[in-house]
Length: 325
Image (cartoon, rainbow, N blue to C red; front, side, top):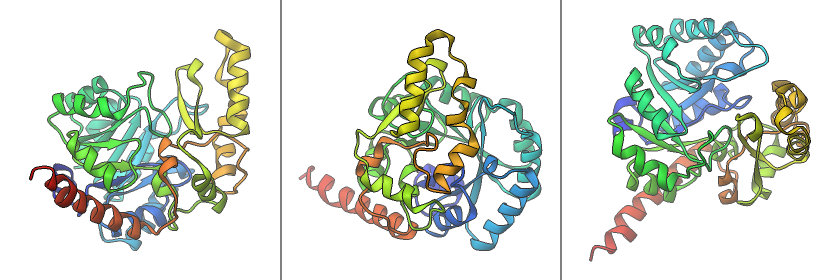
């Protein structure tokens, strides 16, 4: 299948793996790339830029296909050395970067000068237009269904994607609620050039996460996620657990006086790592999309991507074609 995304980024299938903290290691990124999608390492999962450089080299030893690095600019208790991470990305010859969070404009000159193509993750049409205006090569448009930070507009993909298609000239991906061939066909029909999946790739045998995390995704349904940090205007969609309930209780009690320090122990990176890597499922909140309700197996990445492409072709060539007769 050829789309503007596959042509621009040199991949066989219009499927991208989004950056995920404590998940986007070489094992998953290389598996996605080897299966024909675009695998993504997560820069800030690595403790230092030197560690990121080593992870890039490790990924390159595991795949000869294109892969990229996610670099997220978000409020943090201790801002990371972003320019040093960018230097590591450039020095290691990575040519694709997914940016997310805050506007990446200040970092684009260094990336573009090095020939790096930038895909910016956006949660609104206005942000997607801004990303296009500042020179991003593509955008990933995140609907309200998505895991992690969906923005503050609460617009789902059935509205967001066609609106994006009306105003964007650059390729864009649909993110949030993407899991199978139906998702891919729907995204293409709404104007996108492919799909970006995070939660669905968590539930694969190649994902380097604790088995408890994968089992939680199998057990979840479409009502199993919830939103936290709304009162801080830093909304995050997470799987409902003891930690999410505790955060919501604190938000209610504190009201307008809430500060991030009030919930730090439930959202900090070390606590999140206890969930993802150690399987302590109530130690902290962890990002999860509503698409968990569509997950009922744990395939390999290759099996998942092959299944998506076969199903999409069958829908396009079969059911949809039949409607025209």
